[in-house]
Image 1: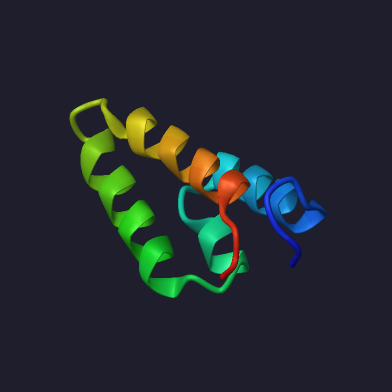
Image 2: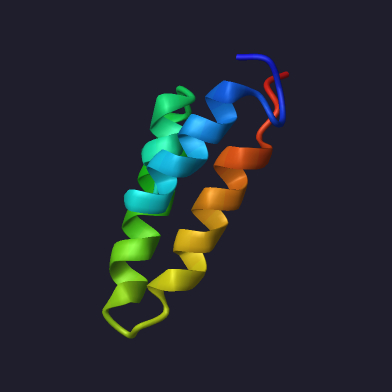
Length: 66
């Protein structure tokens, strides 16, 4: 994948839109994917999961490989 704004990041952001952490998993970042998924699941219980959901989308869209 190239960098921010690449097709891969757009696809990852769309995936994270549907399932938090899925975009990070597509990018090969397993630890971050698990963190986003677990945090979103825990926070949806108290109706704050949308915060992690948005963070997941933005993180996938703006990630730059080193």
